[in-house]
Length: 88
Image (cartoon, rainbow, N blue to C red):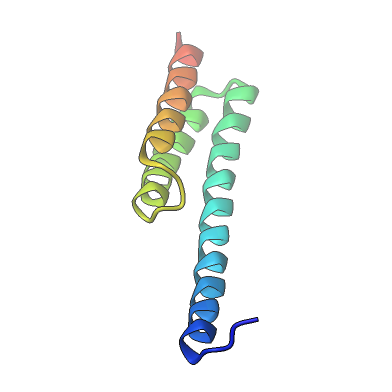
């Protein structure tokens, strides 16, 4: 347990930041799931639209430090690759 005032404040800040990060991570997962469901259904238009919505959300998560920049780029790249393969 934290003893000093500054340590107590730090734990409050960490808890608040953790809640925000969890919400962001969950939101990103939801966007990714929508793209994957659209790909599974085989609907090119819906998949393209879902990817267009998911991409800025994934990049925002990387700039906020929720996920690594390369991880975000890799996820976007792989989703785009799968959507493109669907169109072909």
